[in-house]
Image (cartoon, rainbow, N blue to C red; front, top):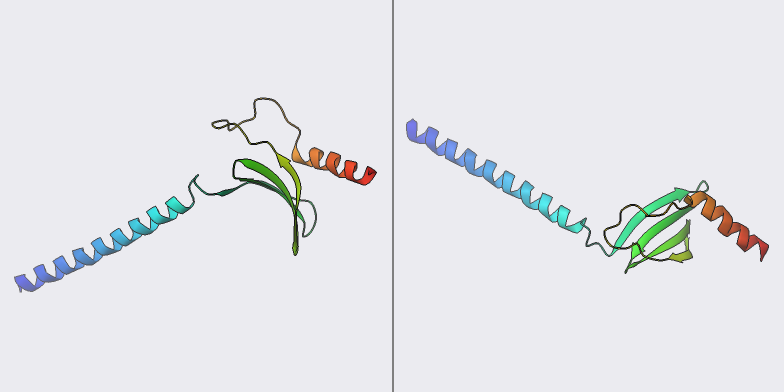
Length: 110
């Protein structure tokens, strides 16, 4: 009886160790894919209509402001990259809605 109980206990511990190791491997592989080494980073987005958005992405050291609509993506502006290590801008900037309104106003005037 005692060898059977010991055998079952060791088998259960081995299965639990395999489950824990698999969970740890999945978690570390997911963390490495979503880290700061991503080539494209979504900095922010703003809905401007029922199916239209303005999206700010960072790619290859620069920031792009994109207009996204069903079946169509267009570049609205190329912005300078943020300096490394600066999370907050050092000078106050206009909010994206007012900048977009100014940008759209310039387009309508032309």
